[in-house]
Image 1 (spheres, helix red, strand yellow):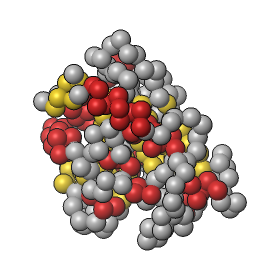
Image 2 (tube, helix red, strand yellow):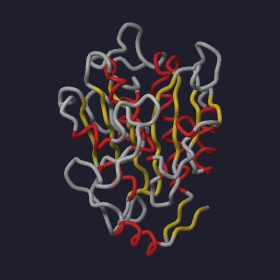
Image 3 (spheres, helix red, strand yellow):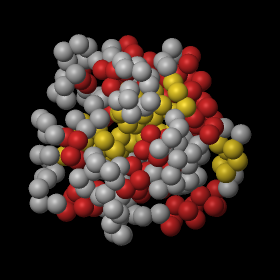
Length: 279
């Protein structure tokens, strides 16, 4: 069980960036990651070559804080689910972000039978093609809302897509790589994926796959650690009906594997939260 001092959390939350309008935290601009056109979200938002609502979109939901009920939350959020490369960038991660947060991806209605809802944030590519140009690596994600939401959460789980080759697996592999700095969270995720019959591998190697940098958005939580899930293309493709894996059709054409995956992550989150005692 993890025992957390409430005063320490409140102090950390007070020092976090304010959550306001969609935007970026002002700071130094990092060098572009290999293959990235934009070195940060700040640079992407400032570019005259991309337009919000046309090329990309941002969606988030932060629930009201209930200071009277620490069973669910206090002056902080237990868990935030994020998809930094949603929409057409890393296909399927937007829909999974919503489902893991407790919302049906088709209409954003809560799914109360599955348990509580969680906060979520996502950046989505809206183009019909070339969405990869909108990719900003997770260590350079400086969207103001994303940073503030993660900084106000005990736990963060970040959803990503990769190819089997990038994951170091055989062609056609349907698998998820489990990374991030929260070892307990990783353990629970591995166990729940195994119980669901989903192939899970401990992520290792470069930061982009392993999510082990403290600068990675998944580790910018109140506890300074989180989880990163890298799903192969074939795993994500198998979650949606054949021929319906488009931005317009995915949300209404999910297959049982999609919900098994979402349930596995939600169960791991529930176990993690149950072991976090706030004093």
